[in-house]
Image (cartoon, rainbow, N blue to C red; front, side, top):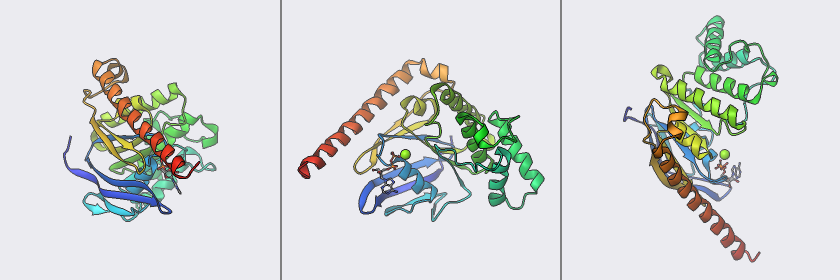
Length: 273
Ligand code: ADP
Ligand code: MG
């Protein structure tokens, strides 16, 4: 692993309409690291990712990528969301070709098509290139969204619960696919910031898990996932180390949720409800 900081969040804070959502977030993600961000619903995970992507601007502090402040979305950061943000009227190849037109205008049409097909094959969608998103299952649509993000060739991949809407088996397969692609290294060895609320998913994939606490969202724990790589789901989940890490993470999440409930009851008492 390379110890060059690629993403740096300094004293990051964000408020929606005066309500503080994130406060004092300090986080450094090194090149080629796979970092999961986990926390109870509403703690600010998506907000954190949107700040890193440049879709939102911080209220306090700053986001640096490669040492430079982020001022908006950029080609160095590809996003994957939970809802398949594909254009429903274009087939999956054209969805990728269209994105490449924006990000790689110098490429010829044939080159864009070739790249699209290459990445669709990588995520197991060879044979479905001409299908519209509506003709694919949820899992396949999400594979297409991942293929599109990978085809951007950005060094950073920002993923917001990309498998959150999938059933357990499909989800496990997608995790395996992402693990394989990431571990295969080379130009695909992205720096990944991966939001999830699933403890096992975080431990299977990531080298480090950041637990966000609530009100306002802050870093409650930063846990190294010292499971050997290359990993396989089976080897990981059956290890004692996995079980110990899972207990630790569940404990941290439990604390975060307890504090959330306490904060909510204080608000109710304070407002006389
Ligand atoms: P998570 O992804 O962890 O579930 P979010 O980052 O989506 O959390 O949201 C954090 C908090 O900010 C929540 O309380 C949510 O209601 C609030 N929030 C999110 N988006 C908006 C918005 N566009 N306007 C106002 N409040 C928002
Ligand atoms: Mg979210």
